[in-house]
Image (cartoon, rainbow, N blue to C red; front, side):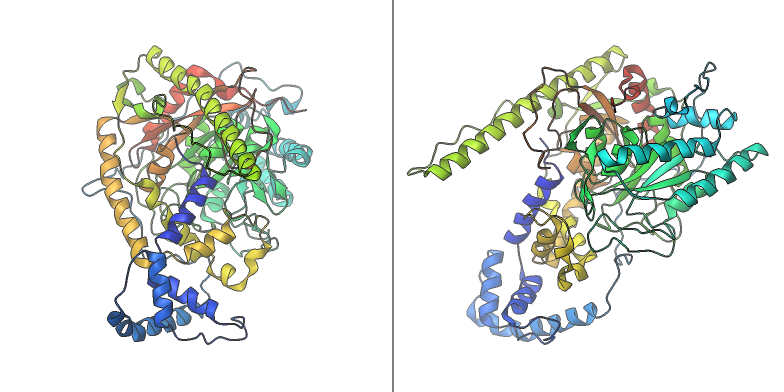
Length: 623
């Protein structure tokens, strides 16, 4: 089973501390040895042999006494260099001079672009008397009505803004309404369409942006305390491209603080299917608002589950494109080698239409490759080879044996152990209940005529590669940690960013590079699986989430049913430790994967499954 985002960060924080080596550790130890605050005492004490011993103990290695003396001059000189770099006060928007490439050696991509082919709207589609009856329609359905002038962009925009205002007090998914900008765009869209200048399927459709995308003239808060009034004097590339496509930005939506979870400086974003639960994260607002019928579509981001998890929790469709397909210029950086922007929608073809508008090089984000995304709704998916990750659908045949109580267990220890055992039992019961949806998906695929090819992912230490994310995140927010402003963030538990950033400062450069070398091995080996199948089906709640985020492969997450009244009860409190907390009436999902830059084939097959099941047409029973 996969760990969720918070569990990953808890685990990797421990890993980072346990694998410490010298430069970061010694700098930190020297800083701790200085009794005065850094602002009043910029000169740190010299590194001593005793500090080397402490760092070596953290690293789990031994340094002979005769070698320590030889190290001192070089270590102190290196530390001086750290100070010089820090004086540059590098902003979050500056990327490292290292570019991650997810392609294995010898791989090629198609650059030949074709005109997109969209499905035809039902001929019987009419406009209801109450415009809100269209709130949950797919973007493609709305697009057809706008194109045929059956509804206006202005009326559609006003309807969705009204819904944002109505449901935000319950779901807490909106940070800033961009109403003035939106109404001006809607007026322009109506005028363009009236004179026959139709820009395509997103023209006149209201959308919401995860508030890590910069929008000129409005705050870009990153969901974090201390950044509530931050303004960036330019639009993100994705915003510019959606503007050019005629889409109408109506809101900047919530994200967990600095892209973790669903807690932000204004509270917690909620799941429309069960508002007692959080919406998961970190694309909390985009998933919740899309699910609640308050935008036609939204843009989220994923580094390690931030599109997948909230799409699952909120019962919507998420597309995490191949790394390097969509430029991240103007988006908050968390991990330069893992951040990806992608659409969250109600249907797969909606996601394809959005990706069609936002992908491709922008001349700024140099990780973006000039690969083609050629959407074809008429693609014969029967011609595709379909695999499935067999292990992700199998029952756990070797559950962990019960742990015997320790000798002389105290009453408090017994209470804690019994609580942990109850939580673990609930976790196992929910996983086993949800497994029947995965198995039903395999049966449905077979009924569709799919010959499923069993696929195995290579056995590699994927979890040990994940701390590289923490190292990059700590660098992206270096000044936040050193200034002490991390105390302004809403959440301060040991698994939250402030503590994770501090721990990550002990991850050495050598080990960070080794993690990325291990990722190169993973890219080569995992890519072999996609030589066996064009599309691979996987349980969403499995290790594939970690694997494919590390290797940069694309994923499409679709609703796959709803838990019945017989579902195990969720935990009494949604702590955020488990994305799959379940409970009656809540959605489950299925994930489809594909090779690098094969996102069009991925969407074509995911759409076929979605049309065959119809779960995406259901929506939460909002009051």
